[in-house]
Length: 384
Image (cartoon, rainbow, N blue to C red; front, side, top):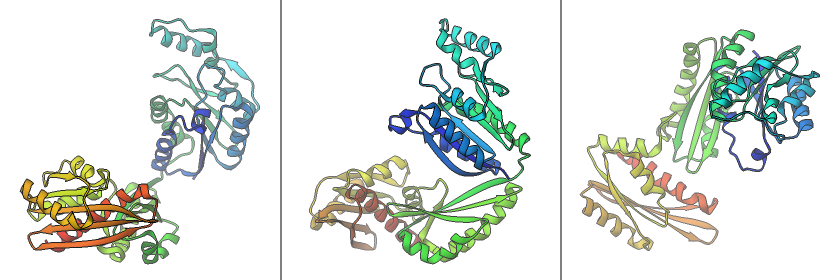
């Protein structure tokens, strides 16, 4: 199975002026092909540095994909850099110049001499016609692999990748395997505690298991490589069953599930409606519940209150909206830590919780909101 590397090119990426979305799209496309991606790299608009990065990647990987630097301007150096790395001269392709001219003419303009640069590619390279832009892409074949150069404009890159590059890679490397990923979402448990429960599974070779921590949540990623999707699913299923057995109710969902949606679904199954009140949370809880669009959520309110007033304010909102239950959350600073007060009012009465958070203060509202939603979710499940 071939190994791949991705190189994104552009000084604007290094300066933080442009967000790189291309790497993620290419990485997922390679994953679907069963190709192992070992490295990604960003290089500025410099011929020598790009050339060196490509040469090093060629020595490690059979598939090197670059994006960016194929435009008509002086600071679009990818063509020259790839030619340098491959030891080939640039040569003009008249048919490319004709295509570029026709496309620019559609805008009612006449191409300038600078745009002729886009018709030059390394000698011997395979041209990938660009039906949605003026920058042609190309493939340089090496003794042990390929270097594929795509435009940096995301929509152009995505079109060329799916229409031309993916079919080429399937044929060139006889790709038949797939890599599938299943992500389990856990809440109410820290990354360290979760790792203690499933750490041995993180040493598996196939499927692999990895953790990604968020504020108040942890993702458990299970990735399997197999000849078919069905076989990959079977590999994942066995490990997923083990993870669920060990983590129990800490798992709240999979893949695209979000905590607020799962919590509200649990509330709806009880036949309840929900409202909420928050203080000092910058809308972290209210916004997520409102954005969910779930019928079980009535409305909410936000204003500064003292911790001792949280329960009264939460009950007032419940009475005002006519909701069956109400959850309240208040956040305040206490030296180096944040204090979180939670209250849950249900037909069975009132429960309160006090938590502290020692991470970055700007993450505290999201962490507090996740703690409140997890409590709501568990309460609804336990009282079903």
